Image 1: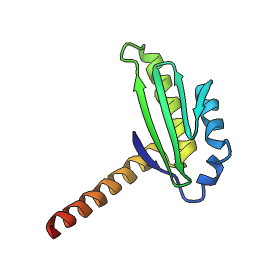
Image 2: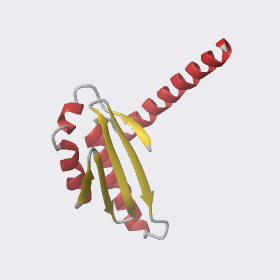
Image 3: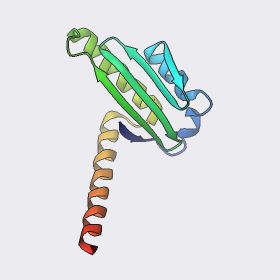
Image 4: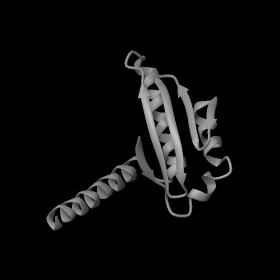
Length: 116
């Protein structure tokens, strides 16, 4: 699962069914178990979303490699709309934040290694 930051102040809108509502809006029928939500949509065989906290969600997707280009495009667009609504960051901002987080984690790991 990939972890995504949620913009400060936006996480409260995902509580109390807010995330479930966003998923239903984009993907239709969903199943819910604890804080895990699962749906499927066209070429998106499965999207699993875990509401970790008001600052983080975890997402795992599985695509159908045999889907038509049209279905794949519509699925990708729906995924991006959902992710932007859920995190309040656009695709470029999500990538930039993930890179910054990876760099920070790598630096911390290197410092820990040097201390050992």
